[in-house]
Length: 271
Image (tube, rainbow, N blue to C red; front, side, top):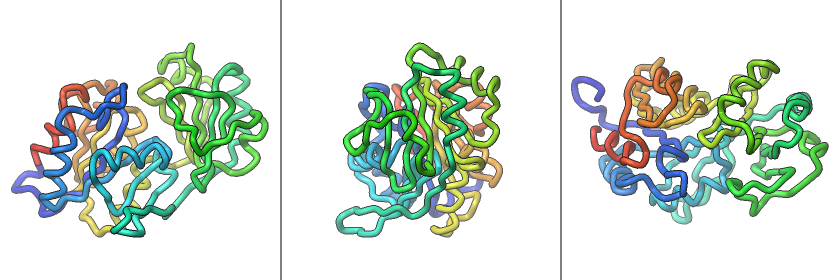
């Protein structure tokens, strides 16, 4: 994959939704065994996701891994393992921004949307229930309270809109003071300006001491473009899942099978 032999150790960062798991939350075929094989070979396998930490922990358990770091909230939160025996994690780094202006602007155009914010400590506030959200440790609040404190990210779901509608809206209103991505289930995810999975993974790579070129990232969505560009720019590999949109595939330098056909397993077996 890297030319003359695979590096002794590779930092492998996997997206979750549409990469490791299918839309019904079942695991992609072969992914558990492939991850176990990669770990046994000495590689560092971690998750880099738009999910909150609470929604990420169960996937770590299902994959049976306990990496040193986990990237959540599309790069706005980095968790670090603090106890190898209990697999306990603590917040290592977080980014935040004042979301008042962004939320006000979005509500003008999407008055019926469902909104959620994640605070730097991982706590979440939401306006309306959404099946896709794990709200076990979240509070329902009036819209006006969402931006009472700086947030790590804003998530917007408008059931009647498509991902194309979201992209058009972003262009029309000019979300230029924040970073944004449209998720695979057509929701808008907004992070602090200049923050994405790639910026977080660069911090992780530096902490762990991996060569910049000894990196493999795999994902399927527009929120993976940042980490794809980061990996490619530094000589690493970025692999797009087979069902990825064209702009996601264009940011990668490799591709694999769709998630329902075991794309991650195929990519990891090629190491």
